[in-house]
Image (cartoon, rainbow, N blue to C red; front, side):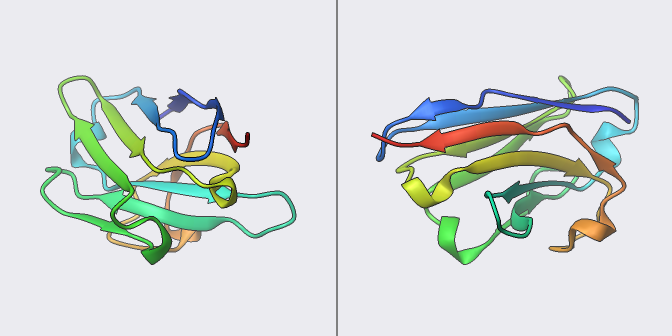
Length: 121
């Protein structure tokens, strides 16, 4: 499975961005998908994940109510909608697949290359 993120960029505080992660391969619909981020000088951080059906999502507390993960299995794509962005959300965002219902990056088998999100005025 190959994962390719897109949609990153520069946004002002309070703004919104939607990241996409397109997957190749026919197993996407059976994969738990997750989003992680890594800010400069910091460790990689779990952002959220979504079950294969898309019915259940989980988020780290700092993004709850602002970020929403969804997926379209017909398009082999998972999304991260980010609203009310803050400067502290600045990071490289990665999608990951195959991790079970886990917050640990080491549990995920497949990773994208990452997309930069910068929140600044």
